[in-house]
Length: 141
Image 1 (cartoon, helix red, strand yellow):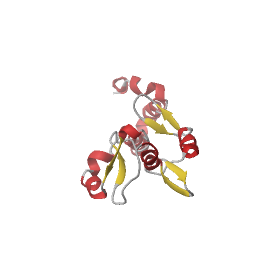
Image 2 (cartoon, helix red, strand yellow; image 1 turned 180 degrees about the vertical axis):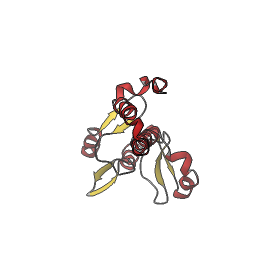
Image 3 (spheres, rainbow, N blue to C red; image 1 turned 45 degrees about the horizontal axis):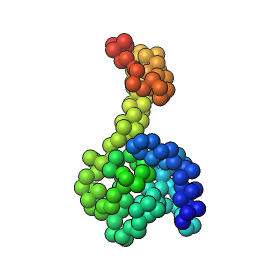
Image 4 (cartoon, rainbow, N blue to C red; image 1 turned 90 degrees about the horizontal axis):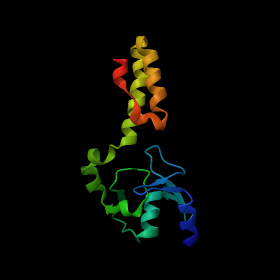
């Protein structure tokens, strides 16, 4: 297990809050990790490695709602039915909003070709992470 934990820790970026999974991810943003010859969710491995075994009736969930977070302090056990009942509260995160905003702007170019230059400027700004909190949309209105 020690070698698995070392391999695992080489694939994460630890911050003071979340531990971000930097290796392969599913379409939904969940990290995947190879353990005992199988590919399992990285947050599930983190729970096993740092907290212990998982009952077969339970699933591991992140209380921070970041699908790519593997910080054991953010992980808790729940059931599928509990998670399903809170689906909309749990599944919307900042990354999803960001990606949907980009998709919306890209579709808007097709609907409003007259705004193409302005929209492309916005897209260039928001795709540069250091600019995300500095965008002044009012300049374009």
